[in-house]
Image (cartoon, rainbow, N blue to C red; front, side, top):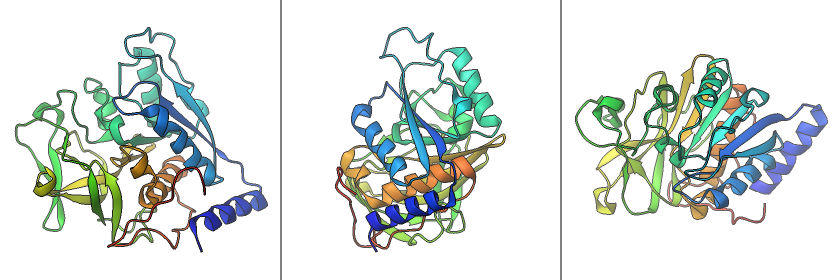
Length: 291
């Protein structure tokens, strides 16, 4: 059974049960990545599940007046950030903190973990961040070594990646609803493999890592790729994957993103793992523009 069939079955079951769709908000508008290309794909991936009604809040462009940017976060079950840019107004930051702390879901997508290095509570929410002049004061590096997660407190910058390439994702927690049923290892399409992220890393569980090979310009470490966190009553899913469209076409990205958003919104995952999910030796992609 292919991915399209599973999507259609999920939509049918949702309609038959009469369950109301969850409300999701994607925030974009500034990014050093092509948010104009990726936001429509993220929106479509969520709509394909049949579980979400999706809206988009687009911030003013870089350097413009941000004072009127006040999304109504509390109207949504989950907020997906595709944003990396100017600071939000203090009132918007406070509203977002209250939203997540009170039980709102939050999904950190790729370069959203580069954002807001000076916003302490945001860094608590994302666990690990990169770039933005983050240094040892931001928190430790976190890696997977010899069967366990290791926090390394040492000086150095935060945020790096080698050249884009295909790489193997390794599940480190198969008991979590997001990763339950996924292969222990699977190949991901050509993408940036973030390394050297650092941050508070509190209330955080690393679900998956990938080896950052020195031959591609990496660190020689197993780096966190998928993470979940709690902030007050809020659930947070953090994926470093998805630099550009070829990476978003990977079923590994699509499925973990869809399941991660559902978990952040509801605390559970009802979506099955498609039979054509990537294998330990082969990337499986679904070209954009069709199911």
